[in-house]
Amino acid sequence: MDRPRIALLNAAHKAAPTRRNFIRELEADVVEFHCPSGEFPEGFGYDGVVVTGSRASVYWDREWIGKLKRWVGEALEAELPILGVCYGHQLLAAVMGGRVEPMGEYEIGYRTVEHDGQNRLLEGIDESMTVFTTHSDYVARVPPGATVFARNEYGVHGFRKGHVFGVQFHPEYDMEMAREVTDGKTGELPDDRIEAVLEGITEEAYGEACEAKRLFDNFLAYVLEVQRGRITAN
Image (cartoon, rainbow, N blue to C red; front, side, top):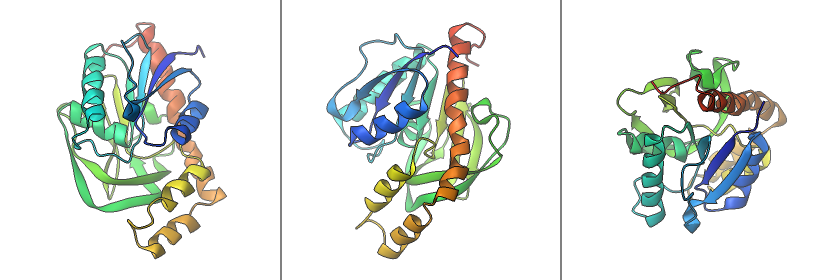
């Protein structure tokens, strides 16, 4: 596979762990921009874009969030393929006319998500898949014209519109990241729930969740097809 040039819009407050996870999974020439520090691409000379997770909420009034929304909106007009993960999924939904709201609860840990088997982003992945999740906001309404392709009892876990794909779960996480994020919920969640999630971060669960990492290869293959003019936005 050729190596596409991907803009990684890192929305995490701690840049390094998120950078590590995405660069490991993306077989591409990745150019990272740490958005909370005010770093953004100057133009759209990329084959595709990935927007990461974050502790922020898309509805917060922060200068960097507003700038990220504007840049993504212009990238959409430029018809760049975009993959959003967790916060990125929510931000894409909001920019495209959907609605993001607090859930009033927390989904965290290795969970089962069902997908319809019809979306190429999850091609080759079992329709009942194990994934790591951590979020308290969700996409309450997908953008007009978007197709939902994955969900569980907590709501939408995947949508697509044109060249845009969003997933609520974290396919990029390794076990170290899963533990770090779970430990970081101390004070937000009851200790017994945190302990239960930590106990569930096992080699077996991680091995099952690794199947979902295939979506990165699927996205990059899609990016190359767009680059070669074999796919147009629909």
